[in-house]
Image 1 (cartoon, rainbow, N blue to C red):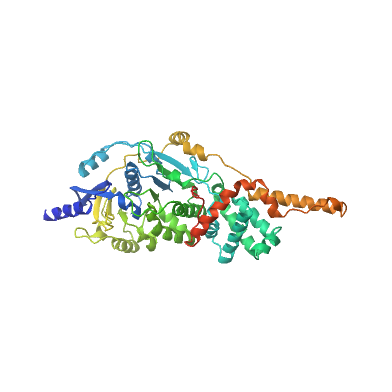
Image 2 (spheres, rainbow, N blue to C red):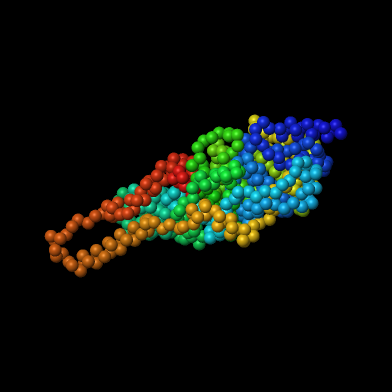
Length: 516
């Protein structure tokens, strides 16, 4: 009994917060829920990132759902990376059942169904808001990283971007960049080498092949206009709740380059766009990456380094990033050490390696006078987890084996009809539905090369006659400057400043309002 009283006092002292917070569950001791031992999460430290881990079927996705609901209720926008395609149910109200009532009799409080304000997003032709980026906004640094170029090749990409910026050649999609590559290795090589340095046709050929490889993974759908605006991720609904943006990427989980392209662009743009905030009373945005092991197992070195860098820097912008995975050892140690909130569901010990992993996992949690952590990791049930977070002073809270609250939204996916209704009622879907193909580098260079070829043919046929009619031809630069590309100049020039500032960090950047 004394032990139970000491445990209750420990939990109450550890999980009492002055600022805004929401209930995650009720702590257990020796397998029994202790009345009054409520476990809360403080909003003030939700920008310190987090981990939700556990074996298949232990309730990770439902925990993610519960935390996302708590954030939305507190007017914090949420972005969910729905890699398995099972998070759309947050847009619909849940259904009561006897198991939920039994759970709440133990943990206290009451349950009521709720649907959350949601938007569906897509990188492909899935229904929902289309996410796009222009090549120019993406920038030479990120493009070189995702193409996994060496220093020489990356230098050539930077040169080509500079040439396009100087000559007002907008790079909107991949066909623009491919056209510039072809131009630089053939008709325009002499002109570029005169002002920008030597160009290796071997390097341009290698870069072109890697761009084609990226296209084959669907990146041609990603690059283009209209670019997504980062502010559209941070919307508050009319009823005051944070909007939950659900990015459905189940159809691209086997295309790591495309997903890496998206992740690099998103993280860099959030960092580039948001002002420094320090530690706010609550975050401006929280992003959840479900099935994160799929990212880390398949990710390029560039993505891993980028995540490591951004996880250390972006919390000061008011953004929290949560990784949801089966095994905490799937997360690189440098990233794992940055995660302040840890929710650990049960692990299975089928092999010697499993037992070794469980011991390593237990060492990542605070020491407890009430639990043998390594043993408890294999004993907790579905919908239960070991919890520790950071209090408002940044100190880890006591380890708490917790029976979690239930999601108020649907614990299943939306039907096709419900998805159609959600998409059809979305103003954001309409805003980004149209694919725009403005005049850009591809059209400008194609037209100029065709015009040059025609003039060469005309000159050859007419000989040297009519010298009085001869006129000094404009240079390619002068022709381009006089074209309608000038309408695109402001956008292209603006992106250069941000790209330059972020170059020292190894990050890319785009115009202030652009998401990608």
